[in-house]
Length: 320
Image (cartoon, rainbow, N blue to C red):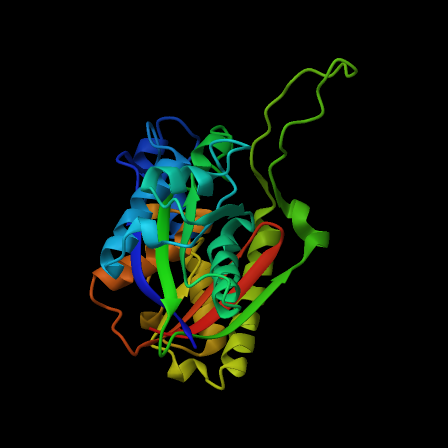
């Protein structure tokens, strides 16, 4: 039986930060940011947490699907910015929701996280191990950014998106995933360094580092490639797709993908103008926005794709 998304939800922090706001703190400008990325605003967490935002998005997804938390059997949460090393953010969400029967764990595939988590849940359901799953992408990227580095801090935002899925008559048609670990350090953030009674180094907190040109080249090459592979596996072409739900990183990347697929840009909805790049949260927030705005209807064909640190990439073709 196909695996189908039955409900979506999203949550963004209250604080809205515009490019003009950033001009007060960073050597940048609205023109510089928007012309290069398409980003005008982003939401930044002040009191919100990764698990807290994830739980709010999950509640909305369950509400849309008409499901109760106690009936959820699996929670997979994609994030690179959990609130704790342990317990996992997924276990925190399980506790917050009261989803006491659910298996809960995190996955780390950076910006590809939601696509990876969705495929993990798909396979859990296909094997019969569980009957349904709650998939979440949630990030508080603002806490790992160097706010003096205008090359990175202006690009990212915080938020969470979620989807509830179970067996149905239609749904996911094909999946493509991959990783290129040899190039992983072009986008990195070091965890705690070794520090104990036998080391002499002081404690220093690291921040996100990115080789923008290398990441851009990877994205414009790999995103259309994996989309075409997923379409081929589904015995479809770009003409068959109603909407392409892509990772919201940069408008130039999305325009490049549209051009390579020879698909009209109107098929590529965007939220990045007001959310920035939210890593694992980007795809589910975009998907939820499309559903709630009434653009996405049952029977529509959707192609998702994400790319990010790792380096990781993935694509999914489904019938909504």
